[in-house]
Length: 235
Image (cartoon, rainbow, N blue to C red; front, side, top):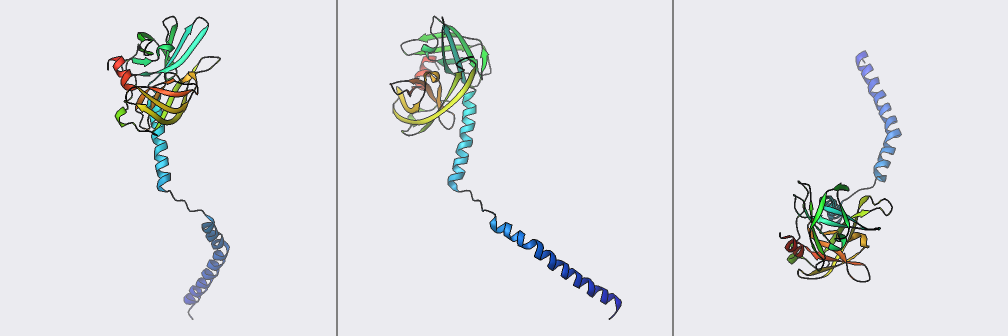
């Protein structure tokens, strides 16, 4: 056999031996890892859940920028709650009980103090209009109440204040629509404290149904419908 062929033959044998050795050493571990690796599948329900969570996060961020923090000092008493920015040029609404005429009012947007004053107050309707001295504010869309359904998921976002420092922060709650009567009231399953008074109530798309107030001994939230608020504000 010629030398070149003999050398080639030896190289082929060596390659085969080396390949067998490497195969015995590494392939079992490789196949074992493949067999032990879990298979991940995203079901339609999981995909919908992920999309819904993302939509809710977006809605919260959108409505959060339109929340008006309200703090009123009456003598030694401090009243706190929330409101809603209605227009980008600073028209806002809150509950009249949060801004009594005898108190000194402070307002906050995104936890930052802003200047503003009460320009209209109706204690019978328990609504008050506030004019914030700032332009370019975020205003959200309004929910069409004729599309409201029993059992619909709704959310509440409040500008809350620390009990000791009274510095503002945010809180979110959720529930469903329990009952409603046209444009007069919407009852919800949300249970809250008085800190949530005047908080915007919105749906998954970030459209506002109205402002919250507590009705009944169980601290359940009822909604001032947005139609009444728009009429009060002249919108």
